[in-house]
Image: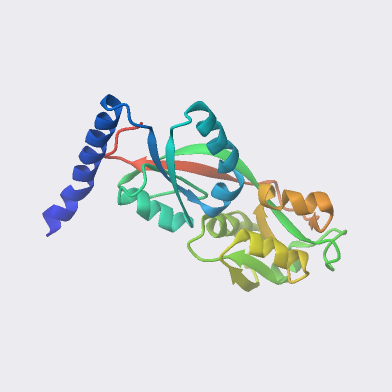
Length: 217
């Protein structure tokens, strides 16, 4: 019933804390359930998880990788101890803190017609865009930073993976906007180039979220 649904998160939080105490006194290995949106999981977490394992060799980490909307749902349901996401979170059951800043870059293939010259904002808006799917933190943040300047985007294709987007852009299928970290390798190789526009520096905040009923670890 409704009372049970209201009580469930608090009950799960109490059970989690009891299990943590049992592990502590039983000298069990540290266990961490982490949720992360796709870009963070692929490009920011590997080195941090390696450092965690080096410091606590017995630590057990369970990593759920999904888009921001699904990670928010997992943390709200206490299926993850905390989450790292690419957009702001307004879920009433969750507490969110800024984690770090991330630069977003508008880019195209090196041989794209818009590459290598100054591109007007109207021309950029009319170009074929390749974007992440609805519900992705990257998609929400790209629209947040671009739409005030461009008014609209000519979305030619939606792809559920940033790797697929950058490869498709490198193949000449359109333009896109992703984290500079995501496209760094192809920028270095020359397959992709930043577009020259009058846009300001585009940045977003990456967030750490946890359930309000779950004590910080």
